[in-house]
Image (cartoon, rainbow, N blue to C red):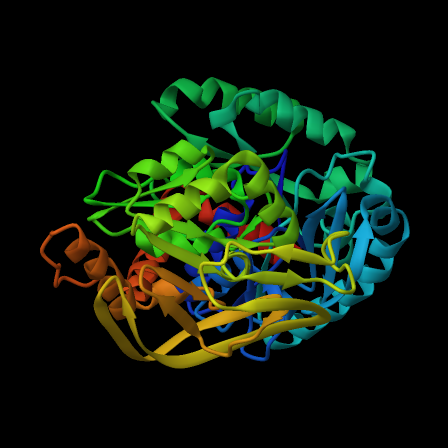
Length: 478
């Protein structure tokens, strides 16, 4: 089990790496994280919702994602509240106090059940913790760190991020704050995201091993441009792609969800993709994307208050390409009705009226994988395609039941992952290129194949910088 000295130290990536390493060794390996807090989610083949990080880890392990890999998912809705999803299904919205002071321990039953199912089918499970195990204010009701390690008697590897500074103190301090039995479960340390000459750090390694009586299993270098799905939006600032002829602005909504929808676009050589935080940034964009949102009503209200709505409408009337996905699609319609006030105290909101749809929120949440064909006009070009796939996660139902709706320069869809379809993505970009009087590009990427190569690249780097012999011994001794 990987636990961290804090959030964003690289637990997810190291878990992904070990899933790949063990898969290549011929093991039947599965990832696991008891509880995720993230707006970046995925829908399994049986229509259940789970965190995106475990999807990437399952891909690295060459198995299909399943909800047992992430039995508890918290999706922040605002006002210190989250939608609570157990075994892939939403059970309600809870504030932080209600969840952490009572419900989380009930949710641990789902965690134990999921672990038992995975243990019966796989010979190796690589487990990811969350945040830090030393958060003493949350520890009594924590279900994702030491409670999991104790339940399984799993050896824990403590990970620290040296790139952010304070690495030595964070390791020593974390171990100091653990109970004796928890500290005993920590069998090794990993220094992650190292830059520079590792030889200069060796005296610090000697100090750590002497101070903590724990071996340092490895010093993993900082890895640039991983090309692997992220767990949360902390890394959005790192996602600005290189200069390209087609400029794409994704509006950074307050409740932005499923930002991985745009990673494949950002990877195109002719695309410059960035996340816009100011309305004036849209002036230079060829494509403006309204992404998914965990709270469409609040984000739409915010767009009207911060000037984005006015700028989007102006650019749309000037002929710029406007794309809405999921919550963004709903915002492009004429009306949003919320009779049960599931998202806010607004019973009715005017949309941007760029697409002829009305959306009504209901108590039911739609989660499903989809396979579909398209045939529509966009920017004066015919875009068609067959056997496209993606997934839907939304609480509203709109008056049209088309997988994608286009009116001239405005396009909307409920389908997450639509730009991961290689042929569709290139046809979309070529339509934008032609509007700019640029020649279309014929070269095509294979995003899925690229991901597999990235998993192998990650696995090699981690394997080369981790004491795998010692890790195997730690595992065999547990």
